[in-house]
Length: 113
Image (cartoon, rainbow, N blue to C red):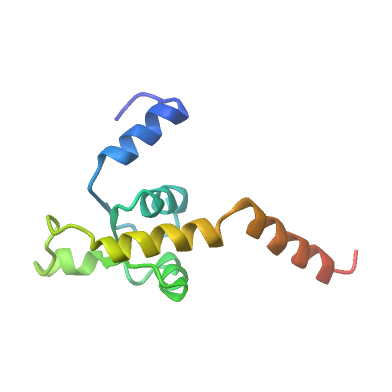
């Protein structure tokens, strides 16, 4: 993709993929990763990243890009439906507007301004 897409068109692109691979070492692409997990897509990220640890701690089913590099990944194998449903529920719960509002409120309540 080289052209800017409106949010609806971009969401359609994300929804059209089956597998997403994010092999970067730095922190990034969390919005896309969360969207893809919510859309029940199979997501590969590096296990050394902070995203991996955070999402793993939440119980999200992820796949390690190192498996691809080692030739041990079956990119064509679909994400198990149980894992896909759990991923969607975790993303819905943890990243909902209500939960984010609660977390920010807790943060501000704990700071003496």
